[in-house]
Amino acid sequence: MVTQLRELYSLLSPGQRRRLLRLQGLIIVMAFAEIASVIAIGPFMAVVGDMSRLQGEGWLAQAYRLSGFDSPERFLSLLGVSVLAVLLVAAMFSMYTTWRLSLYGAQVGAELSSRLYRYYLHQPWLFHAGGSSSRLINRASQEVQRVTNRVINPFMQLNAKLVMVTCMSLTIFLYNPVVAASGILIFIASYLLLYKTVRRFLISNGRRVSRSQAKRFKLMTEGFGGIKDLLLLRRQATFTTQFDRASQQVARGQGVTQGLSEAPRYAIEMVAFGSVILLVLYLLNSHQGNLGTILPALSIYALAGFKMLPAYQKMYGAISHIRGNLAAYESIREDLIASQAHAEAELVGTHDKVLPLVPQRSIRLEEVHFHYPGKRVAALNGLNLTIPVGARVGLVGASGSGKSTAVDLLLGLIQPQQGRILVDERPLTEETLPRWQACIGFVPQHIFLADATILENVAFGVPREEIDAGQVEEAVRMAQLDELLASLPDGLETYVGERGVQLSGGQRQRIGIARALYRNAQVLVLDEATSALDGITEQRVMADIAAIAGGKTLVMIAHRLTTVKDCDVIHMVDQGRVTDSGTYDELVARNVAFRMMANL
Image 1 (cartoon, rainbow, N blue to C red):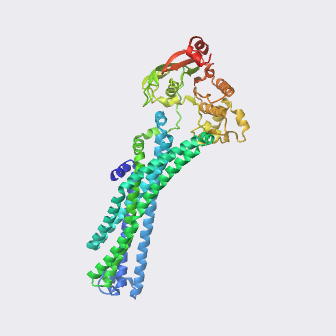
Image 2 (cartoon, rainbow, N blue to C red):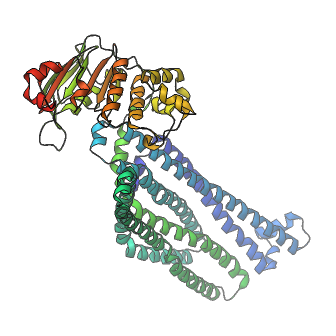
Image 3 (cartoon, rainbow, N blue to C red):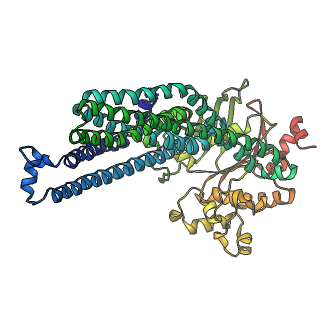
């Protein structure tokens, strides 16, 4: 556990570590304030037990004479008020320190969540294509929250109470070594015995909670994502039953961990009361029943115990919470390490404008090879493809032939493992990739629409205050959305609903086209962009694309050959290679496979 906590500390940012060290100084001051509040009770109880202490040569007698009071009772009242003032200051300082510790823990948790979110959003396409969005959501939200509430915050409390208990123990040890050592050993031994008993169960219980939490997020993501099918097939019970089971496991696991961290308090209270009785008997025997001598010592030890007993319980509870929830840290550990190593330069300026790399002559894929991790067959195997600037180019082929992979390479979402991508004979590199992507507009088969306005969806990812409304209107006009906007009472400010459920398929496609045109893209890539549309809507959308594509380079992937019929050149792709190229009529005339695809 200590090793993992040290590693978690090393994964904090330099600023977070500096704030933690400053808080450490605050914790030490709080510990001394608590000690002062305990020591202050001694003189007061000494005078209560024996008023004669105000006579003679002791420091209490000197203070009494300097006070100017004419009666011991009035001096005792002043002493009592002073003790209360010390207790008040110590209490206020402890509350302030606890507030600062809690605030720090919450801020670190929020910063870790944001750090993971940034890290995930900056990962390459293959990272997301091969993973699960529900797993990432669970890690960036729920697991980080568990680390915050059940590891970082308890650790902060453990740290504070440990410093206080250590300082308090040293103080009462100096006051009476035998009594202090006996009491400390009794409490430490009791808690260690209890912790050793439940430690293994806390570890396994924490891992069970992590697995169940991940299951819940997976079920929520899949259930809401496939709600249409679930409603039609009436299979909600499958998801709700599994969700209930996972929720019960989470609740039971969290409840057990909480119970195991709180339960020892009652056993320790019995130990504490027994220790007080033994302490009274010891003091009575060692001081022959002298109340004036016994009261100060008894008061100091009682108040110290009053302060230390909850501290011991907090420490035990913190250790139990940390041990029971370190599985949450283990689940995000690798991502936290990777996010720390991730260069901050890559996370800054994602909205910075770059000068687009606009091709003037051609775009070429030269002897490109690509093999997906875990796949036995290469997706691309020496692909050669030339796209003339200003031309309309179609890519056709059976499913799995490599068309979409070629487009992903063209978009810069993945990098060729062999071969090159050339823009006007200039190789595409990491330095030129942002400029190249600033030139490309992409319209996928399934348009993602956020639960926002049409304006915000066309300028997707641009902060609201930075959206160029005039540019959006021009993109909307070019995408032939004027008729739709005219029928909507709020125009561009109309909310489309989650995933655009309030729009038709053709309307969603047009918004996708407008999004691609918003940045004045000179190369438009359509990946099965009309496959989900009926024939009539497809013809209208393709006519719109033809109307706006003048002068732009257009690359289209399609299963239905009517979509690419008017292309200047069509490339047939099979097993990761271009097997034939030509116009629609040329391929129909000479290529049997193409005629079969065209149903001729």
